[in-house]
Length: 150
Image (cartoon, rainbow, N blue to C red; front, top):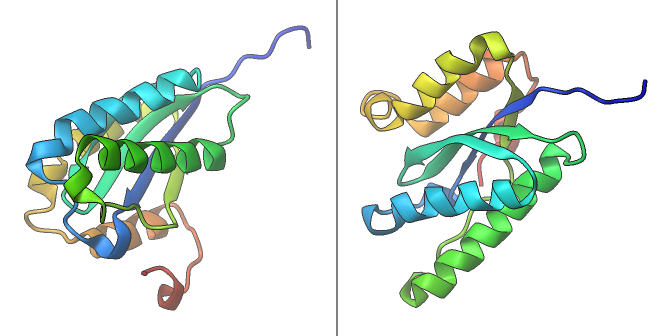
């Protein structure tokens, strides 16, 4: 095939280390925007980044040359380093090691965007743990709960 055509959309979720409330109001909007810039540097598009004090959700459109594992690694490493540089008093800020990444079809894109946009309201009634386990079940991903949490 002379050309490659892809539409690679991922819903990526990861929490702060120990699910500590590191993503405070003071840094939240700038952090989400910074993450969007990291994704653009990879040649992708962060369609939406949002979350709460202890975790982030993002809908990413990635080029076929970027593996999702590499994208998440770079997003987490670069954004935590940036937080440390911008707010030296927040040296304890860190993302946990693992993450969830779920493919999204173009037909489900808008519903996932709505879901991510509603994160603050959603988490008034559902904990991150409940939400993450529900995502794993919905996507039929096998897991052992003993090894999910820090």
